[in-house]
Length: 148
Image 1: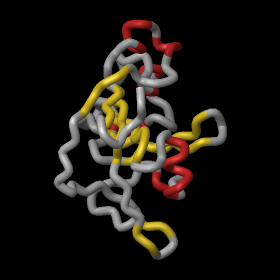
Image 2 (image 1 turned 60 degrees about the vertical axis):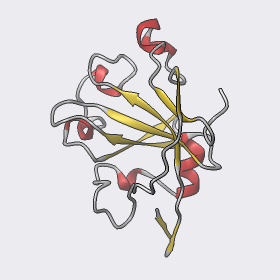
Image 3 (image 1 turned 90 degrees about the vertical axis):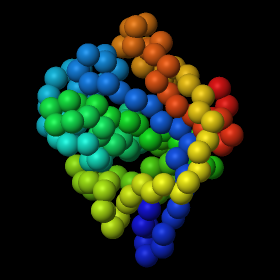
Image 4 (image 1 turned 180 degrees about the horizontal axis):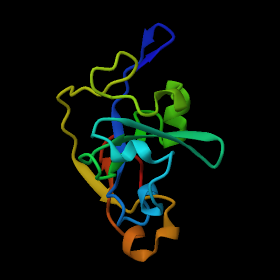
């Protein structure tokens, strides 16, 4: 990540998957809107939204065009929550709908680290009903991720 003329490198330690219109926890399940339009484009785009009116959260689109799927970046080393991570990295709406690929401001790179991954329920989505709230679609680095 590039912040104020300095590179900040943080390993992602936790993510959550959102599968599209059928996934009642996915923003796309409520229909296509100006806010969710980025989800319907190609994969590799950044989807930023405001949570609780105060926290910017960052997702990366993962579905093919017209398949609104994404992954929420939930945590990074030393930043155990999506809002803490975006605050530290100074991520805001200005990155929305930008590519994560070949982007000079923010990118993801493979550093060769291969963690053991544990799964858990996604966080804060009880409104989606048990079928979707109980999905084990939260992926956590078992050494460096959240304690669940």
